[in-house]
Length: 186
Image (cartoon, rainbow, N blue to C red; front, side, top):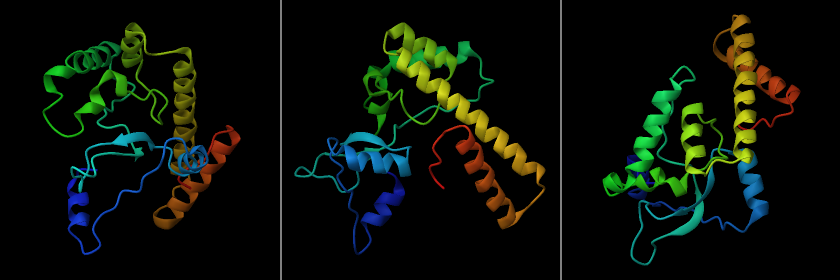
């Protein structure tokens, strides 16, 4: 909500509007998450076009900033990076917009990306990771495996262009359906 594309849009003749999404409107949230599961409830406080009279609103955002890693990253590295960021938040919290996303209390453990075992170890040590989060994380890892198999199946079809895209979407949808998982972004 503070990137250059938002500034560019805000400077256009129609300007920029961030629609509010009240957090207690569960029906709308259910529809929104079914369509775009990467969004999460957020009190948006830092956005292009904010002013003294328009400081914050209940809306949607995605957890940001985030660190993304590969499963091959060592548990030790992931643990210590998570520890360094979370334990030193007060030293960098004012260094730029969006830094509040690194605050321990702002972590969303039920989001769409699985957490690395090293990060999980840190959050468990802090007492903020629960068995509910373990179950969610295991489901996300299963989803990754389903998608990886669908991707390999698509590659083996030896297609290109639109035919490849079509086959990928078919294999993706089929794999998720067979696994009993939702198919957002279809």
